[in-house]
Length: 517
Image 1: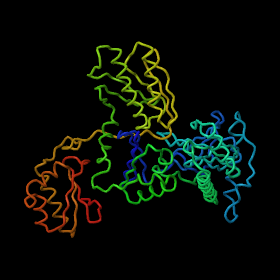
Image 2 (image 1 turned 135 degrees about the vertical axis):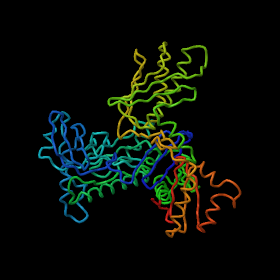
Image 3 (image 1 turned 90 degrees about the vertical axis):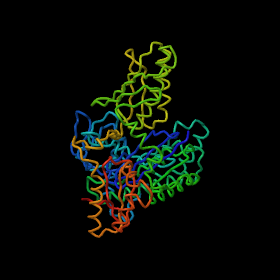
Image 4 (image 1 turned 90 degrees about the horizontal axis):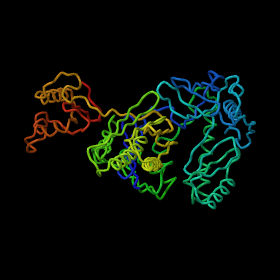
Protein backbone atom coordinates (compact mmCIF):
# COMPACT_ATOMS: atom_id res chain seq x y z
CA UNK A 1 0.00 0.00 0.00
CA UNK A 2 1.32 3.41 -1.01
CA UNK A 3 0.73 6.04 1.69
CA UNK A 4 1.15 9.80 1.26
CA UNK A 5 0.65 12.81 3.52
CA UNK A 6 -0.28 16.15 2.00
CA UNK A 7 -0.03 19.15 4.35
CA UNK A 8 -1.78 22.41 3.55
CA UNK A 9 -0.65 25.30 5.76
CA UNK A 10 -2.99 28.29 5.73
CA UNK A 11 -3.29 31.53 7.68
CA UNK A 12 -5.92 29.94 9.93
CA UNK A 13 -4.23 26.60 10.62
CA UNK A 14 -3.08 23.35 9.09
CA UNK A 15 -4.98 20.72 7.09
CA UNK A 16 -3.43 17.25 6.87
CA UNK A 17 -4.63 14.69 4.34
CA UNK A 18 -3.62 11.03 4.55
CA UNK A 19 -3.86 9.19 1.23
CA UNK A 20 -3.73 5.43 0.72
CA UNK A 21 -3.24 4.50 -2.92
CA UNK A 22 -4.29 8.07 -3.88
CA UNK A 23 -7.57 7.70 -1.97
CA UNK A 24 -8.29 10.11 0.89
CA UNK A 25 -8.76 8.15 4.15
CA UNK A 26 -8.08 10.70 6.90
CA UNK A 27 -8.43 14.46 7.08
CA UNK A 28 -7.12 16.33 10.11
CA UNK A 29 -7.65 20.02 10.78
CA UNK A 30 -5.68 21.98 13.34
CA UNK A 31 -6.27 25.66 14.01
CA UNK A 32 -3.53 27.86 15.42
CA UNK A 33 -5.63 28.55 18.52
CA UNK A 34 -6.53 24.89 19.10
CA UNK A 35 -6.90 23.88 22.74
CA UNK A 36 -7.85 20.79 24.72
CA UNK A 37 -6.27 18.38 22.27
CA UNK A 38 -6.09 14.69 23.16
CA UNK A 39 -2.84 14.11 25.03
CA UNK A 40 -2.49 17.63 26.48
CA UNK A 41 -1.60 17.85 30.17
CA UNK A 42 -3.44 20.33 32.41
CA UNK A 43 -3.29 21.35 36.02
CA UNK A 44 -6.94 21.05 36.97
CA UNK A 45 -8.87 22.08 40.06
CA UNK A 46 -11.46 19.63 41.37
CA UNK A 47 -14.71 21.64 41.49
CA UNK A 48 -17.40 19.10 42.32
CA UNK A 49 -17.52 15.50 43.54
CA UNK A 50 -20.50 13.40 42.42
CA UNK A 51 -20.56 10.21 44.56
CA UNK A 52 -23.64 8.92 42.74
CA UNK A 53 -21.66 8.80 39.47
CA UNK A 54 -18.39 8.04 41.27
CA UNK A 55 -16.86 10.89 39.34
CA UNK A 56 -15.62 14.44 39.66
CA UNK A 57 -15.89 17.60 37.59
CA UNK A 58 -12.53 19.32 37.14
CA UNK A 59 -11.90 22.87 35.96
CA UNK A 60 -9.20 22.88 33.24
CA UNK A 61 -10.19 26.20 31.68
CA UNK A 62 -12.76 24.89 29.19
CA UNK A 63 -16.27 26.32 28.83
CA UNK A 64 -17.55 23.17 30.55
CA UNK A 65 -15.76 21.46 33.43
CA UNK A 66 -13.91 18.29 32.49
CA UNK A 67 -15.28 14.89 33.53
CA UNK A 68 -13.04 12.56 35.58
CA UNK A 69 -14.46 9.13 36.42
CA UNK A 70 -13.06 6.93 39.16
CA UNK A 71 -12.00 4.31 36.60
CA UNK A 72 -9.84 6.98 34.90
CA UNK A 73 -8.12 8.02 38.12
CA UNK A 74 -5.22 5.55 37.68
CA UNK A 75 -4.10 3.19 40.47
CA UNK A 76 -1.41 5.75 41.23
CA UNK A 77 -3.81 8.66 41.79
CA UNK A 78 -2.50 9.41 45.29
CA UNK A 79 1.06 9.52 43.94
CA UNK A 80 -0.04 11.95 41.20
CA UNK A 81 -1.72 14.27 43.72
CA UNK A 82 1.37 14.17 45.95
CA UNK A 83 3.68 14.83 42.99
CA UNK A 84 1.51 17.71 41.78
CA UNK A 85 1.65 19.47 45.14
CA UNK A 86 5.41 18.88 45.47
CA UNK A 87 6.09 20.23 41.98
CA UNK A 88 3.92 23.33 42.51
CA UNK A 89 5.71 24.28 45.74
CA UNK A 90 9.16 23.06 44.67
CA UNK A 91 11.87 25.67 45.23
CA UNK A 92 14.94 23.55 44.52
CA UNK A 93 17.13 24.75 41.62
CA UNK A 94 16.54 22.37 38.73
CA UNK A 95 13.65 20.71 40.57
CA UNK A 96 13.62 17.70 42.87
CA UNK A 97 14.88 14.33 41.67
CA UNK A 98 11.88 12.34 40.41
CA UNK A 99 13.92 9.14 40.66
CA UNK A 100 13.86 9.55 44.47
CA UNK A 101 10.13 10.27 44.61
CA UNK A 102 8.35 8.01 47.11
CA UNK A 103 5.17 6.67 45.56
CA UNK A 104 1.97 6.27 47.55
CA UNK A 105 -0.03 3.01 47.87
CA UNK A 106 -2.30 2.19 44.93
CA UNK A 107 -6.03 2.90 45.17
CA UNK A 108 -8.48 -0.01 45.05
CA UNK A 109 -10.54 -0.66 41.91
CA UNK A 110 -13.85 -0.59 43.79
CA UNK A 111 -13.14 2.58 45.77
CA UNK A 112 -15.06 5.87 45.91
CA UNK A 113 -14.09 9.15 44.27
CA UNK A 114 -14.50 11.17 47.48
CA UNK A 115 -12.00 8.91 49.27
CA UNK A 116 -9.28 9.91 46.82
CA UNK A 117 -10.14 13.50 45.90
CA UNK A 118 -11.39 14.59 49.32
CA UNK A 119 -10.48 18.26 49.87
CA UNK A 120 -10.81 18.99 46.12
CA UNK A 121 -7.09 19.29 45.38
CA UNK A 122 -5.37 20.54 42.25
CA UNK A 123 -4.27 17.55 40.20
CA UNK A 124 -2.36 16.87 36.98
CA UNK A 125 -4.72 15.43 34.35
CA UNK A 126 -4.50 14.43 30.69
CA UNK A 127 -7.11 15.08 28.01
CA UNK A 128 -8.67 11.74 27.06
CA UNK A 129 -11.42 13.10 24.80
CA UNK A 130 -11.83 16.59 23.39
CA UNK A 131 -14.94 18.65 24.24
CA UNK A 132 -17.83 17.36 22.11
CA UNK A 133 -21.11 19.29 21.69
CA UNK A 134 -22.24 20.43 25.16
CA UNK A 135 -19.87 18.09 27.00
CA UNK A 136 -16.56 19.19 28.49
CA UNK A 137 -13.34 17.26 27.94
CA UNK A 138 -13.00 13.71 29.30
CA UNK A 139 -10.02 13.56 31.66
CA UNK A 140 -7.68 10.88 32.96
CA UNK A 141 -4.98 10.64 35.61
CA UNK A 142 -3.36 7.69 33.82
CA UNK A 143 -0.60 9.84 32.37
CA UNK A 144 1.35 8.67 29.35
CA UNK A 145 4.02 10.28 27.17
CA UNK A 146 4.15 8.66 23.71
CA UNK A 147 7.39 8.46 21.76
CA UNK A 148 8.34 6.88 18.46
CA UNK A 149 9.26 3.47 19.91
CA UNK A 150 8.07 3.57 23.52
CA UNK A 151 5.42 5.13 25.75
CA UNK A 152 6.54 6.42 29.14
CA UNK A 153 4.13 5.96 32.07
CA UNK A 154 5.22 7.65 35.33
CA UNK A 155 4.60 6.34 38.87
CA UNK A 156 4.92 2.64 38.09
CA UNK A 157 7.62 0.07 37.31
CA UNK A 158 5.82 -1.98 34.66
CA UNK A 159 7.41 -2.93 31.31
CA UNK A 160 5.02 -4.16 28.60
CA UNK A 161 5.60 -5.07 24.96
CA UNK A 162 3.09 -4.59 22.14
CA UNK A 163 1.12 -7.76 21.39
CA UNK A 164 1.40 -6.98 17.67
CA UNK A 165 5.07 -8.07 17.83
CA UNK A 166 4.62 -11.75 17.05
CA UNK A 167 8.13 -13.13 17.68
CA UNK A 168 8.54 -14.32 21.28
CA UNK A 169 12.35 -13.94 21.00
CA UNK A 170 11.99 -10.33 19.85
CA UNK A 171 9.54 -9.59 22.66
CA UNK A 172 11.97 -11.01 25.22
CA UNK A 173 14.85 -9.02 23.69
CA UNK A 174 12.93 -5.74 23.82
CA UNK A 175 11.70 -6.42 27.36
CA UNK A 176 15.25 -7.10 28.55
CA UNK A 177 16.66 -3.98 26.86
CA UNK A 178 13.96 -1.65 28.18
CA UNK A 179 14.13 -3.10 31.68
CA UNK A 180 17.87 -2.34 31.79
CA UNK A 181 17.58 1.29 30.60
CA UNK A 182 14.25 2.26 32.19
CA UNK A 183 14.45 5.33 34.48
CA UNK A 184 13.36 4.80 38.08
CA UNK A 185 9.68 5.49 38.84
CA UNK A 186 8.75 5.09 35.18
CA UNK A 187 6.94 2.29 33.45
CA UNK A 188 7.45 1.66 29.73
CA UNK A 189 5.20 0.32 26.99
CA UNK A 190 7.18 -0.85 23.95
CA UNK A 191 5.40 0.05 20.71
CA UNK A 192 5.17 -2.07 17.58
CA UNK A 193 7.54 0.33 15.78
CA UNK A 194 10.33 -0.75 18.18
CA UNK A 195 10.61 -4.18 16.53
CA UNK A 196 14.18 -4.73 15.37
CA UNK A 197 15.47 -1.46 16.85
CA UNK A 198 18.78 -1.22 18.67
CA UNK A 199 19.42 -0.40 22.31
CA UNK A 200 20.77 3.04 21.33
CA UNK A 201 17.57 3.98 19.45
CA UNK A 202 15.34 2.88 22.32
CA UNK A 203 17.55 4.64 24.86
CA UNK A 204 17.46 7.89 22.88
CA UNK A 205 13.67 7.75 22.75
CA UNK A 206 13.48 7.14 26.50
CA UNK A 207 15.85 10.02 27.25
CA UNK A 208 13.76 12.37 25.12
CA UNK A 209 10.56 11.41 26.97
CA UNK A 210 12.28 11.67 30.37
CA UNK A 211 13.35 15.21 29.41
CA UNK A 212 9.72 15.97 28.52
CA UNK A 213 8.65 14.83 31.98
CA UNK A 214 11.31 17.10 33.51
CA UNK A 215 9.83 20.02 31.56
CA UNK A 216 6.38 19.12 32.88
CA UNK A 217 7.76 19.16 36.41
CA UNK A 218 9.32 22.58 35.77
CA UNK A 219 6.08 23.96 34.26
CA UNK A 220 4.16 22.91 37.36
CA UNK A 221 6.32 25.11 39.61
CA UNK A 222 4.20 27.95 41.04
CA UNK A 223 1.39 27.08 38.61
CA UNK A 224 -2.21 27.91 39.51
CA UNK A 225 -5.13 25.81 38.32
CA UNK A 226 -6.49 25.83 35.68
CA UNK A 227 -3.35 25.90 33.53
CA UNK A 228 -1.98 24.08 30.50
CA UNK A 229 1.22 22.29 31.48
CA UNK A 230 2.20 20.56 28.26
CA UNK A 231 0.83 20.42 24.74
CA UNK A 232 0.77 17.32 22.64
CA UNK A 233 2.92 17.57 19.54
CA UNK A 234 1.23 19.18 16.57
CA UNK A 235 -0.84 16.87 14.42
CA UNK A 236 1.78 16.57 11.71
CA UNK A 237 4.49 15.16 13.97
CA UNK A 238 2.02 13.08 16.01
CA UNK A 239 0.72 11.43 12.80
CA UNK A 240 4.27 10.78 11.64
CA UNK A 241 5.16 9.40 15.06
CA UNK A 242 2.22 6.99 15.12
CA UNK A 243 1.90 5.98 11.47
CA UNK A 244 5.31 6.23 9.83
CA UNK A 245 6.23 2.94 8.17
CA UNK A 246 7.83 1.59 5.03
CA UNK A 247 4.51 2.12 3.25
CA UNK A 248 5.02 5.89 3.30
CA UNK A 249 6.45 7.14 0.01
CA UNK A 250 5.73 10.87 0.01
CA UNK A 251 5.14 13.78 2.37
CA UNK A 252 4.34 17.05 0.62
CA UNK A 253 4.24 20.41 2.44
CA UNK A 254 3.40 23.84 1.04
CA UNK A 255 5.07 25.87 3.80
CA UNK A 256 8.84 26.34 4.09
CA UNK A 257 8.92 26.48 7.90
CA UNK A 258 6.78 23.39 8.30
CA UNK A 259 8.86 21.63 5.64
CA UNK A 260 12.03 22.26 7.64
CA UNK A 261 10.37 21.17 10.91
CA UNK A 262 9.02 17.97 9.34
CA UNK A 263 12.35 17.12 7.76
CA UNK A 264 14.28 17.70 10.98
CA UNK A 265 11.75 15.58 12.92
CA UNK A 266 12.13 12.73 10.43
CA UNK A 267 15.89 13.08 10.58
CA UNK A 268 15.64 12.47 14.31
CA UNK A 269 13.15 9.57 14.35
CA UNK A 270 13.76 7.93 10.95
CA UNK A 271 16.82 9.28 9.08
CA UNK A 272 16.26 6.88 6.17
CA UNK A 273 12.88 8.52 5.50
CA UNK A 274 13.84 12.22 5.43
CA UNK A 275 14.15 12.21 1.62
CA UNK A 276 10.44 11.52 1.17
CA UNK A 277 9.62 15.08 2.32
CA UNK A 278 9.23 17.62 -0.47
CA UNK A 279 8.24 21.28 -0.66
CA UNK A 280 5.31 22.18 -2.90
CA UNK A 281 5.49 25.61 -4.57
CA UNK A 282 3.70 25.22 -7.89
CA UNK A 283 1.35 28.14 -7.31
CA UNK A 284 -2.02 26.37 -7.43
CA UNK A 285 -3.63 25.07 -4.23
CA UNK A 286 -1.84 21.95 -3.00
CA UNK A 287 -5.15 20.20 -2.27
CA UNK A 288 -6.39 21.00 -5.80
CA UNK A 289 -3.16 19.69 -7.32
CA UNK A 290 -3.44 16.31 -5.58
CA UNK A 291 -7.17 15.97 -6.16
CA UNK A 292 -8.01 16.23 -2.46
CA UNK A 293 -10.49 19.10 -2.77
CA UNK A 294 -12.56 17.06 -5.22
CA UNK A 295 -12.50 14.01 -2.93
CA UNK A 296 -13.58 16.13 0.03
CA UNK A 297 -16.54 17.54 -1.92
CA UNK A 298 -17.54 14.02 -2.99
CA UNK A 299 -17.05 12.35 0.40
CA UNK A 300 -18.53 14.66 3.06
CA UNK A 301 -22.07 15.09 1.84
CA UNK A 302 -25.17 13.36 3.16
CA UNK A 303 -25.09 11.10 0.08
CA UNK A 304 -21.93 9.21 -0.93
CA UNK A 305 -21.93 7.61 -4.38
CA UNK A 306 -20.18 4.32 -5.15
CA UNK A 307 -18.64 3.20 -8.45
CA UNK A 308 -21.32 0.57 -9.02
CA UNK A 309 -24.07 3.16 -8.94
CA UNK A 310 -25.05 2.27 -5.38
CA UNK A 311 -24.96 5.00 -2.77
CA UNK A 312 -24.84 5.57 0.99
CA UNK A 313 -27.06 7.86 3.05
CA UNK A 314 -25.29 8.97 6.25
CA UNK A 315 -27.43 10.49 8.99
CA UNK A 316 -26.42 11.71 12.44
CA UNK A 317 -28.73 11.63 15.44
CA UNK A 318 -28.13 12.55 19.06
CA UNK A 319 -27.67 8.91 20.07
CA UNK A 320 -26.06 7.27 17.05
CA UNK A 321 -25.11 7.39 13.36
CA UNK A 322 -27.25 5.64 10.76
CA UNK A 323 -25.93 4.52 7.38
CA UNK A 324 -28.32 3.23 4.73
CA UNK A 325 -27.01 1.24 1.75
CA UNK A 326 -29.03 1.60 -1.45
CA UNK A 327 -28.54 -0.54 -4.57
CA UNK A 328 -27.54 1.08 -7.80
CA UNK A 329 -28.53 0.83 -11.43
CA UNK A 330 -25.85 -1.73 -12.33
CA UNK A 331 -26.15 -5.46 -11.79
CA UNK A 332 -23.33 -7.98 -11.84
CA UNK A 333 -25.49 -11.02 -12.54
CA UNK A 334 -29.11 -12.11 -12.71
CA UNK A 335 -28.78 -13.55 -9.21
CA UNK A 336 -30.30 -11.08 -6.74
CA UNK A 337 -28.43 -12.58 -3.78
CA UNK A 338 -25.09 -12.26 -5.59
CA UNK A 339 -25.84 -8.67 -6.58
CA UNK A 340 -26.72 -7.81 -2.99
CA UNK A 341 -23.50 -9.38 -1.68
CA UNK A 342 -21.25 -7.55 -4.15
CA UNK A 343 -22.96 -4.21 -3.51
CA UNK A 344 -22.71 -4.71 0.25
CA UNK A 345 -19.00 -5.57 0.02
CA UNK A 346 -18.35 -2.42 -1.99
CA UNK A 347 -20.39 -0.41 0.51
CA UNK A 348 -18.52 -1.96 3.48
CA UNK A 349 -15.18 -0.77 2.10
CA UNK A 350 -16.50 2.76 1.63
CA UNK A 351 -18.14 2.77 5.09
CA UNK A 352 -14.84 1.80 6.75
CA UNK A 353 -13.20 4.70 4.88
CA UNK A 354 -15.98 7.12 5.85
CA UNK A 355 -15.67 6.28 9.54
CA UNK A 356 -11.96 7.18 9.46
CA UNK A 357 -12.40 10.17 7.19
CA UNK A 358 -15.18 11.82 9.20
CA UNK A 359 -13.86 10.46 12.51
CA UNK A 360 -17.31 9.13 13.35
CA UNK A 361 -17.48 7.67 16.85
CA UNK A 362 -20.03 6.11 19.16
CA UNK A 363 -22.70 3.72 17.90
CA UNK A 364 -23.06 3.23 14.14
CA UNK A 365 -25.97 1.24 12.68
CA UNK A 366 -25.68 0.11 9.05
CA UNK A 367 -28.71 -1.04 7.05
CA UNK A 368 -27.20 -3.23 4.32
CA UNK A 369 -29.17 -4.64 1.42
CA UNK A 370 -31.02 -7.73 2.61
CA UNK A 371 -29.33 -11.09 2.10
CA UNK A 372 -30.82 -14.47 2.88
CA UNK A 373 -27.84 -16.81 3.01
CA UNK A 374 -25.98 -16.99 6.38
CA UNK A 375 -22.68 -17.57 4.54
CA UNK A 376 -23.04 -14.27 2.72
CA UNK A 377 -23.79 -12.45 5.96
CA UNK A 378 -20.66 -13.98 7.46
CA UNK A 379 -18.61 -12.92 4.41
CA UNK A 380 -19.85 -9.35 4.84
CA UNK A 381 -18.94 -9.24 8.53
CA UNK A 382 -15.45 -10.67 7.85
CA UNK A 383 -14.95 -8.12 5.08
CA UNK A 384 -16.01 -5.23 7.32
CA UNK A 385 -13.58 -6.36 10.04
CA UNK A 386 -10.80 -6.60 7.44
CA UNK A 387 -11.55 -3.15 5.98
CA UNK A 388 -11.45 -1.62 9.47
CA UNK A 389 -8.21 -3.32 10.46
CA UNK A 390 -6.20 -0.21 9.51
CA UNK A 391 -8.38 2.01 11.73
CA UNK A 392 -6.38 3.27 14.72
CA UNK A 393 -9.51 3.93 16.80
CA UNK A 394 -10.76 1.09 19.00
CA UNK A 395 -13.79 -0.50 17.38
CA UNK A 396 -16.07 -3.52 17.45
CA UNK A 397 -18.13 -5.04 14.63
CA UNK A 398 -21.17 -7.13 15.58
CA UNK A 399 -22.82 -9.79 13.36
CA UNK A 400 -25.77 -8.80 11.19
CA UNK A 401 -28.99 -9.02 13.19
CA UNK A 402 -32.17 -10.77 12.09
CA UNK A 403 -33.44 -7.38 10.95
CA UNK A 404 -30.48 -7.07 8.55
CA UNK A 405 -28.68 -4.41 10.60
CA UNK A 406 -24.98 -4.33 11.47
CA UNK A 407 -23.92 -2.54 14.65
CA UNK A 408 -20.47 -0.98 14.95
CA UNK A 409 -18.97 0.82 17.91
CA UNK A 410 -16.01 3.10 17.37
CA UNK A 411 -13.96 5.04 19.90
CA UNK A 412 -14.90 8.70 20.05
CA UNK A 413 -11.95 10.92 20.99
CA UNK A 414 -12.62 14.21 19.20
CA UNK A 415 -15.55 15.94 17.48
CA UNK A 416 -16.66 14.50 14.16
CA UNK A 417 -15.18 16.17 11.07
CA UNK A 418 -17.98 17.99 9.25
CA UNK A 419 -17.52 19.90 6.01
CA UNK A 420 -20.29 21.73 4.19
CA UNK A 421 -20.15 20.44 0.62
CA UNK A 422 -23.06 22.53 -0.66
CA UNK A 423 -22.47 25.89 -2.31
CA UNK A 424 -24.55 29.02 -2.51
CA UNK A 425 -25.97 30.06 -5.82
CA UNK A 426 -23.06 31.65 -7.72
CA UNK A 427 -25.30 34.42 -9.07
CA UNK A 428 -27.45 35.49 -6.13
CA UNK A 429 -25.18 34.17 -3.34
CA UNK A 430 -28.19 32.67 -1.61
CA UNK A 431 -30.20 35.92 -1.45
CA UNK A 432 -32.54 35.23 -4.36
CA UNK A 433 -31.67 38.60 -5.88
CA UNK A 434 -29.53 38.83 -8.99
CA UNK A 435 -26.74 41.32 -9.61
CA UNK A 436 -26.23 41.69 -13.32
CA UNK A 437 -23.01 40.06 -14.49
CA UNK A 438 -22.89 42.61 -17.31
CA UNK A 439 -21.62 45.23 -14.91
CA UNK A 440 -19.08 42.91 -13.19
CA UNK A 441 -16.21 44.06 -15.42
CA UNK A 442 -17.11 47.69 -14.77
CA UNK A 443 -17.29 47.09 -11.02
CA UNK A 444 -13.80 45.56 -10.99
CA UNK A 445 -12.38 48.44 -13.01
CA UNK A 446 -14.01 51.02 -10.69
CA UNK A 447 -12.34 49.40 -7.69
CA UNK A 448 -9.04 49.19 -9.56
CA UNK A 449 -9.27 52.90 -10.35
CA UNK A 450 -10.03 53.65 -6.70
CA UNK A 451 -6.96 51.69 -5.55
CA UNK A 452 -4.70 53.42 -8.08
CA UNK A 453 -5.84 56.86 -6.90
CA UNK A 454 -4.99 55.82 -3.33
CA UNK A 455 -1.39 55.04 -4.15
CA UNK A 456 -1.36 51.27 -4.68
CA UNK A 457 1.36 50.43 -7.23
CA UNK A 458 1.37 46.62 -7.09
CA UNK A 459 -1.92 44.72 -7.05
CA UNK A 460 -3.19 41.19 -7.40
CA UNK A 461 -6.74 40.29 -8.42
CA UNK A 462 -8.32 36.88 -7.80
CA UNK A 463 -11.42 35.91 -9.78
CA UNK A 464 -13.45 32.88 -10.77
CA UNK A 465 -11.82 30.80 -13.60
CA UNK A 466 -14.64 31.68 -16.03
CA UNK A 467 -14.20 35.40 -15.33
CA UNK A 468 -10.43 34.97 -15.68
CA UNK A 469 -10.96 33.46 -19.14
CA UNK A 470 -13.05 36.48 -20.11
CA UNK A 471 -10.47 38.98 -18.83
CA UNK A 472 -7.54 37.24 -20.55
CA UNK A 473 -9.22 36.28 -23.88
CA UNK A 474 -7.69 37.44 -27.14
CA UNK A 475 -4.08 38.31 -27.96
CA UNK A 476 -1.86 39.36 -25.09
CA UNK A 477 -2.00 43.05 -26.03
CA UNK A 478 -5.74 43.04 -26.68
CA UNK A 479 -6.92 41.38 -23.47
CA UNK A 480 -8.82 43.35 -20.85
CA UNK A 481 -6.03 42.72 -18.35
CA UNK A 482 -3.44 44.27 -20.69
CA UNK A 483 -5.71 47.26 -21.33
CA UNK A 484 -6.04 47.85 -17.57
CA UNK A 485 -2.28 47.67 -17.08
CA UNK A 486 -1.71 50.14 -19.92
CA UNK A 487 -4.47 52.52 -18.78
CA UNK A 488 -3.47 52.69 -15.11
CA UNK A 489 0.30 52.03 -15.51
CA UNK A 490 0.36 49.69 -12.53
CA UNK A 491 1.64 46.17 -11.88
CA UNK A 492 -1.49 44.03 -11.96
CA UNK A 493 -1.52 40.25 -11.62
CA UNK A 494 -4.78 38.40 -12.24
CA UNK A 495 -5.23 34.83 -11.00
CA UNK A 496 -8.02 32.25 -11.12
CA UNK A 497 -9.36 30.77 -7.88
CA UNK A 498 -11.49 27.61 -8.05
CA UNK A 499 -12.96 28.32 -4.61
CA UNK A 500 -14.63 31.55 -5.71
CA UNK A 501 -18.22 31.97 -6.82
CA UNK A 502 -18.85 33.23 -10.34
CA UNK A 503 -19.10 36.94 -9.51
CA UNK A 504 -16.71 36.93 -6.53
CA UNK A 505 -13.42 38.84 -6.81
CA UNK A 506 -10.82 40.14 -4.37
CA UNK A 507 -7.91 42.58 -4.55
CA UNK A 508 -4.63 42.08 -2.67
CA UNK A 509 -1.87 44.63 -2.04
CA UNK A 510 1.92 44.30 -2.35
CA UNK A 511 2.06 42.64 1.10
CA UNK A 512 -0.44 39.97 -0.01
CA UNK A 513 -3.07 41.36 2.35
CA UNK A 514 -6.67 41.47 1.13
CA UNK A 515 -7.98 44.98 0.51
CA UNK A 516 -11.39 45.48 2.09
CA UNK A 517 -13.88 47.88 0.48
